[in-house]
Length: 256
Image (cartoon, rainbow, N blue to C red; front, side, top):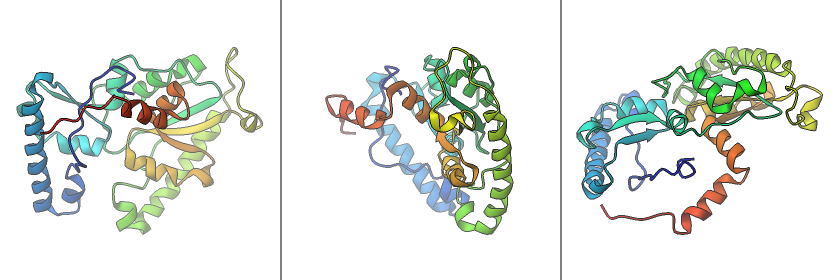
């Protein structure tokens, strides 16, 4: 979607973990080493690509956002800001005019990456829900994934999951009772008998993993907001199409 918005994007070399998982599990020394190594690498990027005058660091995870806030990016890229991908896309006007035949609810993560606007307002604007005659509402309660909670304490996570599933079922039932507005394309045949298709959207990769566990029991899909936008704007094969375009002269490698 950054490509589609015409934004020149710089990816730091290699896979970079922000260090939050290590800090959260009590491995403070390891976390500090990761932060230091990453900051050194970002300084190298800033020096090598100083002609680009980088002013924005885009993230797609609230937990990463919280960790990166301590990186002092303003000392690496002067005048720089950190912003969530969804807020950035809204700034660029990358939003939908509604999605016929599908209704959405929104799961706001515990570590929300959306800082400058109400998250529910943002998702409504991005998805164009009002043009479909309804408002995307927040689905309450923690999804139970909570970073490493589902792995380290599945007993607690499972109890959280039961309560979240109840909220999802209630939210889905409410959405399925909302008719498709006049003038919209008809809902898919499979959904026609039970109302529109229902999806739960989130802005957190970890929450997406957690919400995906509810698929069969709650009879709905979970997805990441920007992925759903990409699917609606660029089609079902958006990822393969993008990779093909990027590999066809769209990537410039720079030694830092």
